[in-house]
Length: 178
Image (cartoon, rainbow, N blue to C red; front, side, top):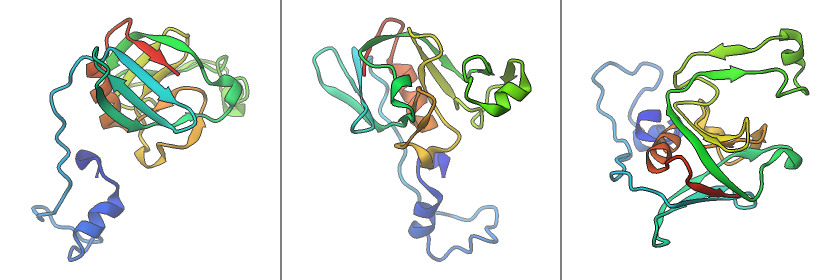
């Protein structure tokens, strides 16, 4: 499902004759066309907290992408206003620092920083677009079906495929308006 940017239930609906409990190698499936156009440079990224979407525009104000986005659960922790891209990394490590999440009982019990290696199941997915507010960024997620909810600690979550595509469109200094 992730390869075709769809939900597993969509694949089931598109392929009603498939026995999903015993799919054999080589089974042909109908899947969405998940091909994106070549990425173009974004001059501006806008995030709507109320609408839970992210849009990127070129230098002429033309819409390049429109993606659903998850936003921070706690309104006070959501960054608002003008930010800028500070870094854009493919396949990042994820560093869990309990000091950043004092409300986390697990973090307090752990009592030390934890570094998780890159990969699609990493908490920040396959792309990290760090913002000029320490600890905040736009990133992927291993759970794309949850994108569009208010459930993060303040970052902006996209499906992995959208986060990686956006990563290719931004550069250090690109403005991000929230």
